[in-house]
Amino acid sequence: MWVLTFAAAAIAAEAEPGQFVNLLLRPGPLLRRPFSVYRAERGQVEVLVRDVGVGTAQLVKMREGDSLSMLGPLGHGFGLDPEGGPVALVSGGLGVAPMPLAAARARDLGLDVHWVHGARTASELCTEWQGDSVHWATDDGSQGFSGSALDAIPAVAGQVLACGPNPMLAALARRRPDAQVAVETYMACGTGVCLGCAVPRTQSRYDRACTEGPVYQADSIRWEDLPPSLPYRAGS
Image (cartoon, rainbow, N blue to C red; front, side):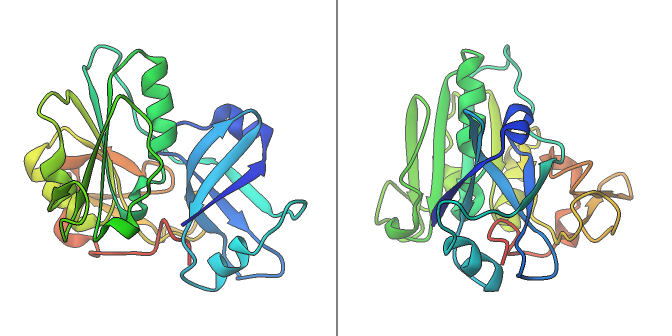
């Protein structure tokens, strides 16, 4: 995984946890690629990238002085309640992308932060973490808790913010229906025009992940109608 840092003062000043930016390289792929805001400070915006396709391969080859088009901040992000108690930031794989900014905002509010991150194996964990305590989980037991990141959520967590594969979020919805989750869905324009990022809601309607989302209350999604896994955070 790579962390890319861009000078984007106007976006950095407004970005909130769970929001994203849409990146466009020229020459490059036709459509913009969405990436969660990893950090936003000192006039800079950071995104987390894994080299998995044509678009991300071009991004990780960028060097100091190169430029691209960044649209953002976009979407509806996480909400933090100053009176809601300790916060668990739960992520699987590239779902860690919105968590550093969420951790910074939670600490600004004086909230205890529990960083809960899982992956298939230790080598795939994002070793950067922020907060008061860290709880690792790996499917193969090579680091931290052996099993799902959901099983590593501390009982003291009053607020749960999560991002990761849709099956993980669906399982979380059954355990913590009040959790806030950043869903993965196909996305093109990022501004609500193309309607390609429809999210099925339990109220028998569809929302647009790029405008009404990507953050929702966990029990408000019809998880069975969402694809199980998408390259949304990777932006391939």
